[in-house]
Image 1: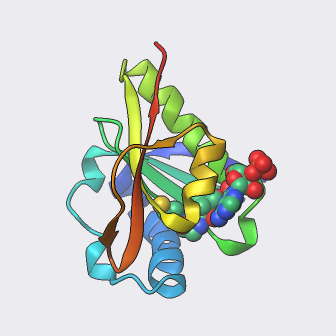
Image 2: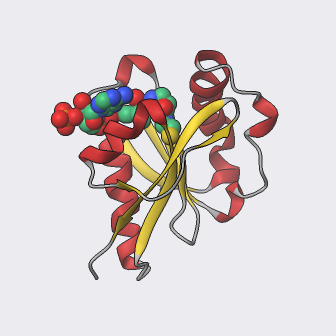
Length: 140
Ligand SMILES: CC(C)(COP(=O)(O)OP(=O)(O)OC[C@H]1O[C@@H](n2cnc3c(N)ncnc32)[C@H](O)[C@@H]1OP(=O)(O)O)[C@@H](O)C(=O)NCCC(=O)NCCS
């Protein structure tokens, strides 16, 4: 059974980082040193489990900056990424934020477009991957 929850980072750090490591470091070759930026403790963290197995994660900072969205390959295209994003968007609305935003890896731009995000700036390089700034304005 798939469950999705907002969790405390310190309590679930190992599970969250196992998914990030698998997707960003092993699959995409991102330097693991870039993962820990000191902001995780302040963020809303989502952990998705398949029974007890961590299969997806993501985070949103208090200003609506979404990041670290990762779904294990065998769990993609099942709607899990969209569920994570919908949960963050609901949280942002509850917090009276006017927008949510992120830096999308170019390969993930169509995914965010299906959720209503639009590009708003120039592409940039981060961790050797081209990123596109995208945002979703929230009608409150
Ligand atoms: C991008 C990612 C989070 C999407 O998660 P997911 O669980 O597969 O997404 P969903 O199943 O909710 O897909 C939602 C929609 O986006 C589409 N979509 C998902 N990934 C896509 C992609 N890479 N390219 C084009 N469309 C995509 C799906 O087909 C679906 O469309 P539909 O509603 O018309 O069927 C996942 O592929 C992933 O973890 N990728 C590797 C890490 C990564 O790139 N993270 C983003 C960093 S910015």
